[in-house]
Amino acid sequence: MRILVTNDDGIRAEGLRHIVEVAKQFGEVKIAAPDRERSACAHAMTIREPLRANPVSWPGCEAWEISGFPVDCVNVGLMIGYPDGCDLVLSGINHGPNLGYDITYSGTAAGAMEGIINGIPSIAMSMALLQAGQSLNFETGARWFRENFERLINAPRADLAFLNVNVPTVPFEELKGTRVTTMGRRVYVERMEMREDPWDRPYYWQGGAVVNVGDQPGTDVEAVANGYVSVTPVSMDWTNRDDVARIREQLID
Image 1 (tube, rainbow, N blue to C red):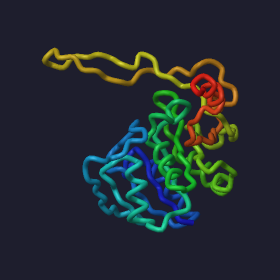
Image 2 (image 1 turned 180 degrees about the vertical axis):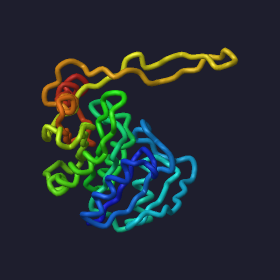
Image 3 (image 1 turned 90 degrees about the horizontal axis):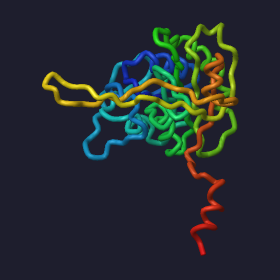
Image 4 (image 1 turned 135 degrees about the horizontal axis):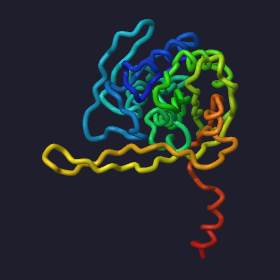
């Protein structure tokens, strides 16, 4: 199996090292990851400046640091690492959760999306650190991934779907199990804060506190909150099919 690995935390991120060590047990691995952290870049693509790919020493596989976003990393990695294509794109392990609406902002998810766009089965994986001061416990994520790798890659899914995996950041023995979930609702409040620089000029800092919206049975948000690994099939076909017929009746004579 030929595996391309990327992330959005950068080529030197601890989570990347863990997912690569697991992937190497199942096939040939090549790495194309950003040369710096690119968190919350969503599905950004570099189109107005050149991309650089510099080789990085990595035990047991070829690796490059790319001067772009995860989407760029997948495309450059395929060109220079697997010009004939590969069998799997892995993105992660992210340093934090990608639950619910986080997927729309996530560079980790975008790496898997770009794999799907290139016709390659893809998995995004994140450690769901939900409380300040918790350890990320990458060992838990890596062990769960190793034990479930073959079941994940053999799981039936639609052509345009990737798997979004979130592992609670607890000791492995404390995991309750695995749930296949839908995408929940996870929003941020008080997102924008106005501050002033030393010259009393205003600037704006975006962040905010996370709020999980109500009871969310069957979702990734609920599963992780209760100690389960969530596996969510996410489709690149964003069409709201329930509305197609209704809107057609309204617009088409």
